[in-house]
Length: 144
Image (cartoon, rainbow, N blue to C red; front, top):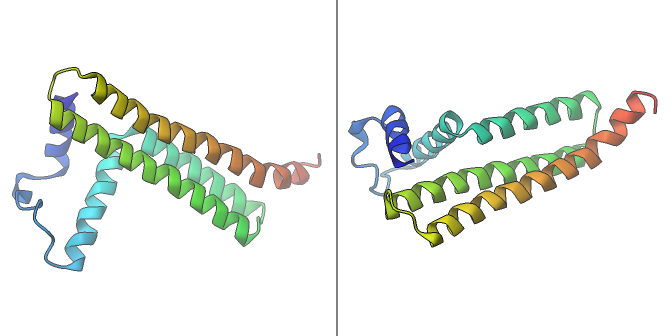
């Protein structure tokens, strides 16, 4: 697992970023580092890409069905929560791998499993909320 992350990190973050652990000198660099985190999540995490795809479908449906702006805001909040938790899950997994190396530790398993479970809970809640917001107008559009 560590070797996979190391390879992925080397492909995304070139060796010239050795000083990236320092506090960024300006706001532009802070945003750049944040964008690099998003790019890393998108490139390396299959579930992050799946969440983005499902979110895009939900937003297209919401716009097509002319869902109210407040319901779109609720969709944005739920989608954002899932994406944030997916990125936090990725960072927790990387930190655990960094701290324990190639050894197994039961607490490392607990940390990784709980982080993954938080994404699962948020994803299920997001699906339920999306269904509650989109299904009634969709069924009405279809004549049911």
